[in-house]
Image 1 (tube, rainbow, N blue to C red):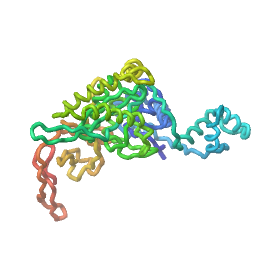
Image 2: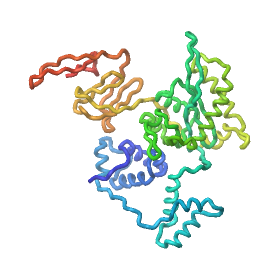
Image 3: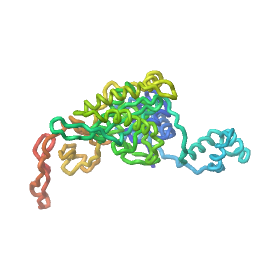
Image 4: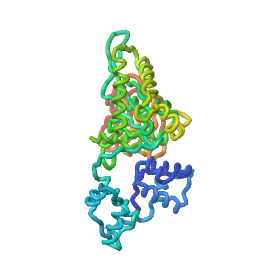
Length: 422
């Protein structure tokens, strides 16, 4: 029975690549969004199998999975040592002068064969994470950027028709310096959402360790306290920049208090000050927003006596990771299943794949110019993306089958990547 793996093959390859560059297990866990123990286990398996980055080009996902997880896994057992009442310890810890070391010493006095101090602390912190405490968050330089859309919109007038269209306002705040970035986008859809992130990183001239978005659909497919599911296109953008994604928990505004405050501040300093201005294009609105951002970031904060820009330039900016050589090119990822005519559909156009993959699930990557199709991490087809009127689909007879029955198949306009079915 093969051991059960907790990482996808794509994550395993990314882990091996980053580990080969010297990234620590802790940083790998943050980047991939899994437990450090999972990373450590996978690295041990890779070392035992003699796998190092770069992997051989002919090593397929199936072969890699066989090398790493051929051995039977060991089922974790139950805890056998006595545990204290963790809820009572939480109350005791609030008392003046009480520390975890004192509580552990009292615990070992009652249970001499109990847990060591390190394991005791780990179990206590694990219990604490299941609570909902209110606490002051400490933000390390270069660690997190909080992103969200403002609930308020900005009006833009079409100069030809006079029609008023409202644009969304994207707001991002760095955790340690409160340095703020904002821009207007037409929608909150995936292309605008990811494009705003690309321009944000370019403005910062660096990349933090983590992005903390709200649980909107462009960022997370499924909101969950324990295991949020990141939108795949958003995850590919994060992978390009080497940044992790840690969505805020549903209905937990304290998780993203930085950006909530930034949104309110941006609404006051941007929308409030520009309420009498009329904009005739998105670019014109963003130019005005950039001027408002300069005022926000250059304003001296009363409690600290320095500006956001000063903190960014002296503390946060140097802690950011370097940008990749090229900006991320937006690509939409989808799952598709190959039809019996060895084609997959995207935006009402059909693209061919090898006929041996009929009824198989594949990954489809769509950019503005190309359609790429992958199966188990290997690209098996690439086509120029089609635009224009939706092809008219019709049913045509395709001849008699061996058993004497006639069948019909849907076809569209003839082209190199769209042949008649049947």
